[in-house]
Amino acid sequence: MPHDDECVIFGNALDNAIEACDKVDKVKENRYINVSVKYDRDKLICKITNSCVNKNKQSKATTKQDEKNHGIGTDNIMKALEKYKSVSKITRTDDKYTLFFIIMDLI
Image (cartoon, rainbow, N blue to C red):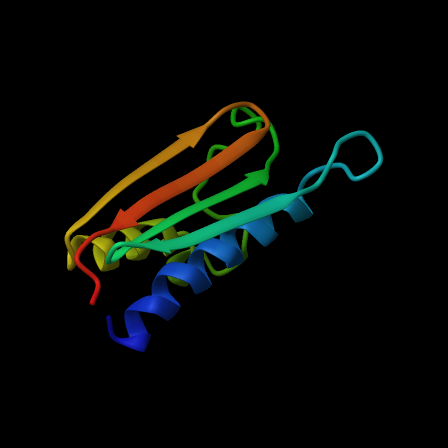
């Protein structure tokens, strides 16, 4: 896998997790980012979980001023994963966001 795609996947995922945690009220709620990466039998297995604000309170893809150039990180992650034999899933609850993916046949 080219380093460019690694940076798109992990850079955007971690940037999104950090931005989401910044919005969580640190006095009332627990902020966290958990990253699990495992390489097993030519497969890269990754799960990134982070705290986030209630999904009903945030309707836009980004809260940054420059909406034209932001709010596309998740789409870029998925496009990069589509280049490879991969399985991915995003789940979100009121206070937790999870990105899970497996990239197969990495040699």
